[in-house]
Amino acid sequence: MNRNKFTGGIFVFLGACSFGVLSTIVKNAYEEGYTLGQITGSQAFLGMVMLWALYSLQKFLFGAGNRTPLGAAGNASSGRIVRSGEQPLRSLAGDNSSPGRTAWWKVAFAGIFTGLVGIFYYQCIKLLPASIAIILLMQYLWISILIEAVLFRKKSHRMQLIAASIVLVGTVFAAGIFNEAVTLNIKGIGFGLLAAFCYALFLIASGRVGNDLPVLKKGALMITGSCIVTWMIFPPLFLFDGLFFDGLYKWGLMLALLGTVIPPLFFSFGMPRTGVSLGAILSAAELPVAVVSSSFILQENVQALQWVGVFLILFAIVLTNIKFRRTANNI
Image (cartoon, rainbow, N blue to C red; front, side):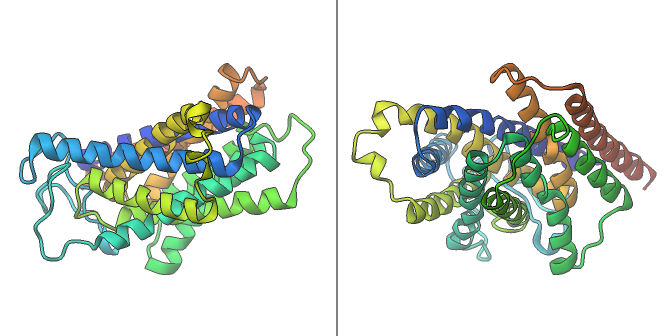
C-alpha cells in the first residue's frame, strides 16, 4: 500500500470512529425530551457554522495561495485515485485557480446525502433497538460496492468482497441480535435501509465530487447542503423559541463535532485516496466503536458474542489492509 492510500485509510478510519459514538449521544438527547427535528437541525446548523469558521480562519492565517498541513481532497473522477506524484497537493484553505474547478452547488448538492443519513438513522434509532439500527446502517457496505459495480462498472477485488462478507457476519454478532428478543418495526426498518442507502451515496459522492477544492471548503459546502435539506424538512423553530440556548445547543455541539464536522471532513480527504470499496470497509469501524460506547457510557450489557463480532470486523479491516500492502510491494 502506498503512503497516500495508507494516509487516506487512517482518515477514513478515524472519521468512522467519530461517527460510531453518535447513537449513544442521540439516545441521551431523546431521553431529555428533544425531538428528531431539534436534534438533527441543531447538529446541521452548528456543523455548518464550525466548518465555515475553520475554513475562514485557515484562509486568513495561510492565505489563498499558501500551503497548509493538509492538501486538497484529491481527484477521484471516473473512480481513479490520483497519486501524490500526479497532481500537486493544494492548500487546505486556499482556492484552486483552475478554470475547471467544481461548481460550489454541485458539492453542496452532494451534501444532501449527509443530512438525509442523519434524519433517517436517528429516526431508526428512535423506532428500533440500537442493535438493529446499526445493523441496518451497516448495509451500506454491500450497497456501496453494488452501486460502484452498476454505475461505474468497477470490479471489486476478491479480498474486498471476502472482507465485506466477514464484516457483515460480524455485524450480526456485534449488534447482539442473538442476545435479546427483538420486536421489529416496519417503519424503523425502512428508515434504517434508507439511511444505509444515503450513506453509501455519500461515500461515493465524497470520493468523486469537489476533489479539486480545499478539504475545509469542500466539507463546509457539503454541510451547507446538509443543513438546507434538514431545515426544509424540519424548520429551525428552536432558534426562535429559546430552546436552543436552554440546553439543546449542548447536544447539537457534540453531534456536530463528532457526526457532522469530523467524519465528512476526514472522508473528504481520505476517500479519494482509498477508493470507495476499501474506504467503505475501513469505515465499518463505527460499529465496534458503537458497541464499546454503549458498554462503557450507557452501561449496556455487551455479551461475549457481541465482542466476537467486534473482533471479526477488526480482523476484516486488518486482512484487507495487509492484502493491499502485499499487492503494492509486489508491483
